[in-house]
Image (cartoon, rainbow, N blue to C red; front, side, top):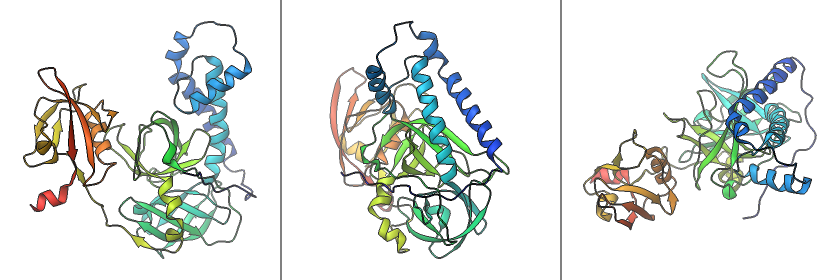
Amino acid sequence: MKQRTFLPSSILPAGSSRSNLTASFLNFLAVCGLILCMPLLANAQENANPSSVQRTAHFSEILTGDAPHDVADLRSMEKLIQQVTQKALDATVGVVVGPAQGSGVVVSEDGLILTAGHVIGKPGREVTVILNDGSRVKGVTLGTDRSIDSGAIQITTPGKYKHLPVRASSNLKDGEWVLVMGHAGGIVRDRRPALRLGRVLANGRDVIATDATLVGGDSGGPLLDIQGNVIGINSRIGNRITANLHVPSTQYLENLDRLRSSEVWGRLGGTQPYLGVRCDSDRQEVVVTRVTPGSPAANAGIQEGDQILRFNNREIDSFDSLKLMVNQYSPGDRISVRIRRSSGNVITLEVELTDRRQLDRE
């Protein structure tokens, strides 16, 4: 798929009221990054410095998920994140729609904002957009796809706005480093701008799962690759750190005209792909503790005591990751599930997912 982007051009001058805050935040981010990577430093060996060509090649691998190997890698990563952070802060905005408040990201010079569908509610609503320098401009809600929680806003106050490019998310790799942003304020008054580092856990057509922590107020904010491109929008916050979901940027790129024209489509909540197993969340292995009678799992022959190893040829390491995997597919999809029986035999079964609501009606 050809990659499409919104390319930055001229930008609106930012005020200086938050310059000290931004500098402090960047320093805090740098220190946190080094602290989190201390185990890597402890294991690093004192080798001769690699050539610049080798260094560049390895750093490109880090961007797509490899771990930093030494201090030089950490410094390169730190420098890149600092550069990305400033641009991301400038383009991440707060949005106030009636009594609700969330985040968004500006992706065009004329002020098109991508956000979550549940933040805007419906088209035609007046919006107050809070820019990074604290100034406020007016906007209006546009279209939304309710089934995946995508939405858009158009700033109506004339101006040229700082914005970020959008990268198609279809080529994201599992393990790729990502950043999540949330605007200052939100449900926590006077909070600082939120930026958190994580990795892609799973990349589906309708949802991206990451381990980058989200909190209330981050909804609608951008999910960025390590180079500062928008690859998704924060949507749902899970109960666990591994259950945070984002709307893929590819969905916005493919439906941009519908969003701009204030179209509303999709059913609220969408379909609910269903497998029909329960597993013990506290166990390291994903072992089935219950199979729902009449469910896709039961029909395929999955049994209590089976350990689920792979789902559609992707490794499963927790019940949360299994649920996230299931949610990437649609009712009617046929999925291969690799399991280990309690006897030790490893087999592969084919499961046809169904809609949970259809099963409930039956």
